[in-house]
Length: 86
Image 1: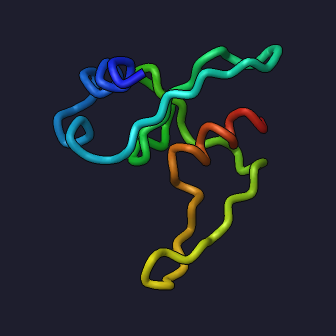
Image 2 (image 1 turned 90 degrees about the vertical axis):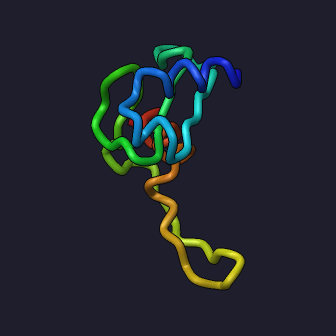
C-alpha cells in the first residue's frame, strides 16, 4: 500500500508531493469503485484522486490535543467516506 501512495504522490506538483496526507482505500461495495485515492489539499478530482464529495456524509469538529476544535471535513478519510455516500 505504501508503494501505491508513493505512486500517487509522484504524479503531483512538487509542493503537493511533499505535503499533505494521501490515503488509498480498497473498497468492496457493489457499484462503487474498488479503489479510491484522496489528498488532503486537493479538492477537485483529477490525476487519479477523488475530490470533495457533495457533503452527504456529515463531518464533525473534534478537539485536538490542545483542546481546540478542528473541522474534519477536509481530511482524506472524510473525502473517501463522502464520495462513497454520494
